Length: 295
Image (spheres, one colour):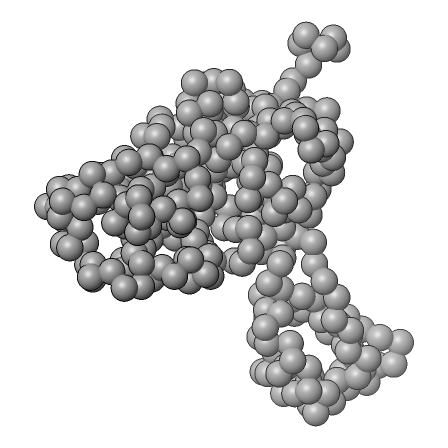
């Protein structure tokens, strides 16, 4: 098949703070990516997938207008741009934690501003201009909202009275002597598709496969596999202690009075459950990481 007619899906991935975690998630989902620092076209081992590195703020517009077939961008930016796109799936990852990104109203620690009502007549800097204006209107507050080109947290109090900025942990705000007053919106990345691309059977299937694999990689991040050998006589009591994603797999061993048990559990309970399993008679307990969990 010639290069002019080969099937190709063009996917936008966020450049900047989410870039590293996006590449890591794609790699875990099965797509190997390499990119030079100066290139906005990362290379991938999938000949049917072409990536474009674009600021998250702009991806939904490029998807809407057809330059991209699909993209990963925050729900906040889709709403900010009022983009007419197909939301395929929420892909709940972030740059530092598993928490959503939060857009918050923040002010200097010594500011008299205590709530949205105190913003009447004030000046606010943010990248999320339209959403902030809608939020103020909803609260019947009139204030000046100006677009910030970055480093928003350093603009208060000298340039503006307050900021609306994005945060995961709040550490950057605290480092700049700012306190959070209110939260406007929480946002996870979304996998979105161009409406016309979504009507193309091949592209839709490719996007749905991408969504399935990305979700599978995410679901595996907080889970581990456990294998163990258990005396058959103690199996029932042990199974009652074992939280499982599904019913565990039980296999026969060469010794008829023993069985092998394999299951998937939340990683956060491992340190409590392994001593309990050991006390219940399990032996040869093995914990192993997972790449993907597909429901």
